[in-house]
Length: 117
Image (cartoon, rainbow, N blue to C red; front, top):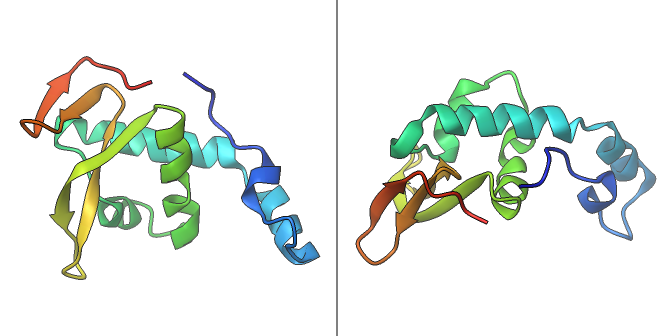
């Protein structure tokens, strides 16, 4: 499994303005990825949706939380979906679980102890 943290070069477009590059360089992705992963892990096999995490970290900007999902999934720390739950807005959101829980798409059942790679 990869370590926490994302290279700042992956956080901005090649044609991004200087201010966007400065902002990307100031983000502590190691801290944020660890924080979000540990929170997702705490939900166990039930998992959580983005709205759960945003409610848990009201002091953090929306994008500081939600931008971590893709990196954590790519690194195998979490899995997203295939199941969904309705969020406060009434729209469905993918359920996220720690990589130690894998959802079988065939039976939509959760298997403990399997790490995603």
